[in-house]
Image (cartoon, rainbow, N blue to C red):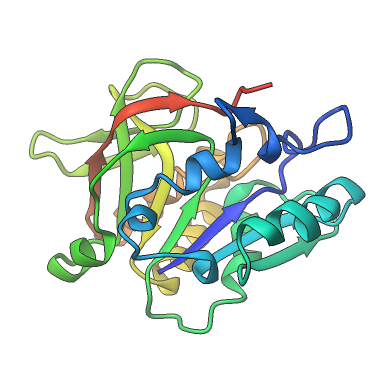
Length: 232
């Protein structure tokens, strides 16, 4: 599984010249707190070589990339882009370009929410034909993205910063393979007016592209949720 972490948004760099990833929360950098408590990391199913970080080509981000990020995750892929994209869903494409295999699952992790989970994504994809998996928790806060289901529990819609259910996204999204991700992006581009938020393509609405293909999307509940995106 390849884990893509888009860090190229306007909120990544701080006014003091640093980056949000290095902010310490209870003695540990924000980025490491998020990524290293994911179940695939703690179970040894993923490591540094499976990570791809997407950052902007700016002095602050490049200092972080060649310093702390290299120290924390030796062997990880790092992609630098020259300007802001129109959202994390598109920034992640730069990370996908480094994939050596197109038949393995893709995880896009926004790495800004901590949680506890026992999910084994490789096993879940092996035992189902689902096109995607989203980790979720109960909420009604409009700061989050949401997923709605029908009476049978099948995902029918995803929305960014719009409370369409009590099932919020924890910011970690898994796609069966590269084709599923690219098809979902194509759907968002085709239906931009319906899925964009603040004129940007976020990751959660990509789920609508999987649903449109007739693919199931599994919702995996998490516990002990801590939102760390507003730290500092």
